[in-house]
Amino acid sequence: LTKKALDDYSITIQQGLMDAATVRQARHRYWLLKYLAQRKGEDLEAWILDVLDTKVLVVLKDYLIVVELPREQRMEYHLDQEVLVRIKKVNPRENQLKFEWVMV
Image (spheres, rainbow, N blue to C red):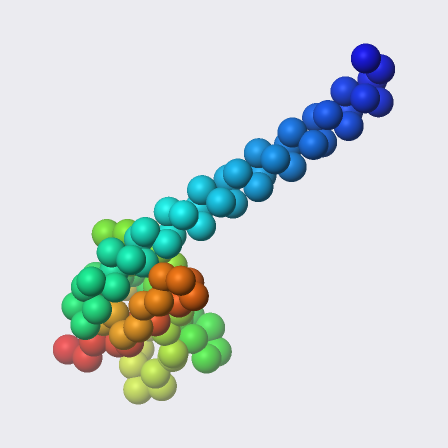
């Protein structure tokens, strides 16, 4: 085999591996959303990752999933602040996961 042929095979194999990783991640997320759908309405602990103009990014403490929430003007946010969020809507087939703030 020539160097060009090996390079072509390498590119094809790398693309296949990336596609397989994408499918694996999508499958993992689907089953996680399926599980969270059974917990709709429950409060979950999260940490604030980033505060933007119109939204706040948080990571769910027990699942390590990053979700967006609308920024509430009357709330004060700090990075790494622990907050409570409630599962509002889950649709595993549509890859939808929506949360709302839990006001304490």
